[in-house]
Length: 177
Length: 260
Image 1 (cartoon, chains in turn green, purple):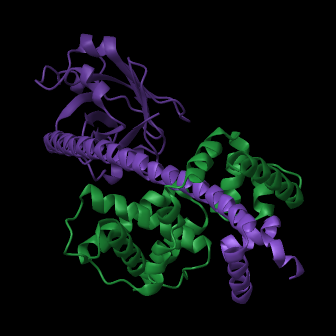
Image 2 (cartoon, helix red, strand yellow):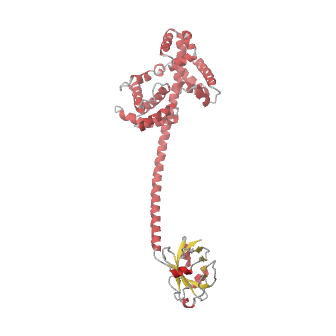
Image 3 (cartoon, chains in turn orange, red):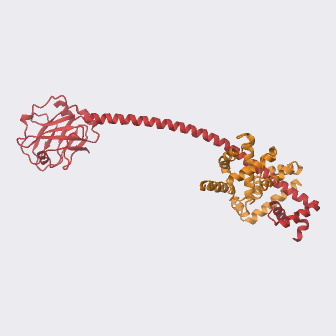
């Protein structure tokens, strides 16, 4: 019991520390646990594996946004996220916790992906300089604070980071407007 | 919030709205404003699009990363499996080698259990001197009645002994040497003395002089030394073979000769 708890803690920490090389270990550790409890779908199919990967990414995002507590059992959380994503992608199959379901429904991309502005935005992001792109990703997606980003990219202070971010954002928005 | 009128002009407000870090009632007001303000709605939408692009790009990046790791993991597993197989083979090989070494060692040890003198040193005066033994107390070289002890199957010829070995005692107070010669098997075998060997001291019961040394390959050949012989050997003896390997005993254990 304690062992499992510690494992959960360890893997939560892996996610919170942006330890991307270890994300695969989250997959290998929890995928068999989650999938073995779901009898209604075939195990080890590409669809199941792909959905589980998406569940890990969603878990990471929600952890960063403080939407999921690190006290919740990770197997259960991943299982719920997996089921919610499966419902979204392949039609309703599972009953899922409403809160978790809302995470998937709030996915802006599902609602706005076809938007022309999104296509522009995607292209603009690729066209940005490597530094600008990394800066935007660190701040908006990894939710890293300005101090951490300053350290990571050898910038003098958090103010510099925020100023650089503002400039990047302005350039970005001008391009997609 | 006075600037809520066109709050989308403020990047901080947009970020708070997007990350839902603003208070719930404020977000509700923001939503309310967006419903009526086209300009703000477009601005917020653009920021949302930017965020979505970033998120999608990063998601794909991570999923790709996991996939790469999947591939690496599989490769590593395969390598590990191969290594494990190799390890098992090595272990088996080592075990077989160990058993062979053990059996060979056991065979050699058991074979050496047979007391087999490899050289006999006797006193004599026949002129075939390979070395000398002197003792502290004796002053009577007994030679004449020992000269006939030779040509045993296990002894060397005098010529061989002459060529190959000699015995000397380095430091003695009195120097009345007994002239001795070897009679033993081929002293080429001496090279197989691993570390030490034993010598049996024979003495003449008539006068108590040291008369013969029997060199044994096996260390357990001679456990007890007679009190008379002990009394005679109150100093060290050094045996030097022609291959320059020196063996020396100690006063405490005079019958064991240790390679120097």
